[in-house]
Image (tube, rainbow, N blue to C red; front, side, top):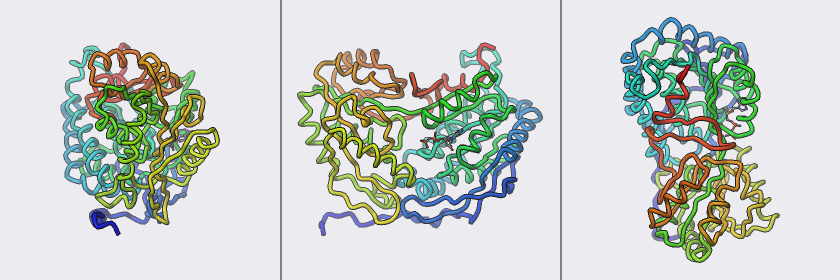
Length: 480
Ligand code: ADP
């Protein structure tokens, strides 16, 4: 045994109580689904069942939408903006008080390391509520007109990679701008949304302002197609985003779509290489690579490729994969069997198409879903691993010789969500950023998020922005 091995440092799970079964949250109460159906939710790190979740059908969605409409008409639209803001501040404070409980539950249900749920996800969740609480009574100063009006009832559908954070990105601006919501969490990660329903009760939020309907794609489709919804906000795959865009075409429904990505992380030869290597690791291995803005295409200047790859391999050999509840863990479990199968299939395609695969020696736990951190070198732009979103801890390495070539390669994708630039020259960073077709561009850093900073994509990465002043426009009838 390595004498310098870390001792296990397990986070206790005693702070969370998981019920055997969860109902739907409609009109301020937990109600049994009309469908009568429940489905299991498991811990992806062990494969063990955690609980059962209600599966909402269209009758359940209809009840939730009606509750949201009634709350909008009778209560929420009549409150002063300052009163609305108070509820958001209250929710934000409760989230901070219960932060550890949310972090542990998120890690159990999602498989992400406790270090990330505790230090990134949940603090950002609270920050989003605080930030938007502040906007509630200042909307007329946002440069969006004298008295911008909300849409009314908003349907929100979120993915499993950042369950609580995506909830916060959706619910906080919607409520701050005066909308009421029906939210559908992803089918593999509903537990923290249901704990958030308890927070809404604890904060005394008026009944029906937030409703949570659980279920899979059919539940999401019922929400999208419900005639009582004024606006859809969706984060998820580009395929489902296209389906949603098709379903709402010809209706008056407004939509924001935050979809996939295949971000280029560009390393110029004048970059601080050690820092860039940290940025590469953070860019692709953060949250198991289950990140739509992940730096999944490394574009490294050819003359520093050998140095970058040598250092990256050493760094990757120190990544700790394993029990997500261990505070030393860097890479946790893949969220589901389906996602693991997708990562394996695309990685196999990378090998079959001729790229060279490398992972550090890495023991994978026997139960649950796991994938070792992996890089592919010798990748060409036509390879599937350079074109398709893998949504896993897999990096495709490509090279370039000139800045112009870096731009062309970076933009050679149907996506345009994010990008990274590493250089010590500010002018080169600004020149590169101005040429990249990506919504978020990080310079000498990666995967940094802030509620004041808008987030969203070009091309097939989506419509609209979330966060900051721009994000407010998504929830207001601006210019109407
Ligand atoms: P991912 O690849 O991130 O799982 P999905 O787009 O499949 O992305 O899922 C994101 C969210 O969209 C989940 O909450 C899922 O249940 C929901 N969803 C899946 N299919 C549909 C659909 N046809 N209509 C509406 N929502 C859907």
